[in-house]
Image 1 (cartoon, rainbow, N blue to C red):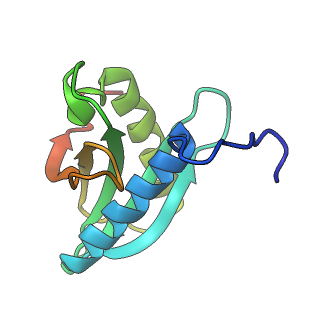
Image 2 (cartoon, one colour):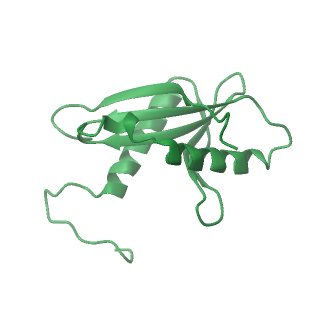
Length: 141
């Protein structure tokens, strides 16, 4: 067991990180089945206050798609989509700009989200939605 991991009793729900990892894997398979190619996973920008992009995907036309994956078991605060607020968007955009700065040429880009509402592995399958163009980078300088 890694440092910081805690043993869970049998039948206990997985922790937040495990649920997030499972939702991210589900979203990756979903996007790949729709023709997108994985470029990078869990890209973090350096420094304090930096951001992270869950998935960087490429469309067949060369568009880079920066994907935020959000999973919520309950929808009492607006569900998974509502949890991608302005501060989170700014951190994702910051990380995307860091990634793009290392490319010789910047391709067309888009910010998408894959939102998963419901319990993963529960009795009812979760509801998954791909939000193309979930937010824009304009005006975030």
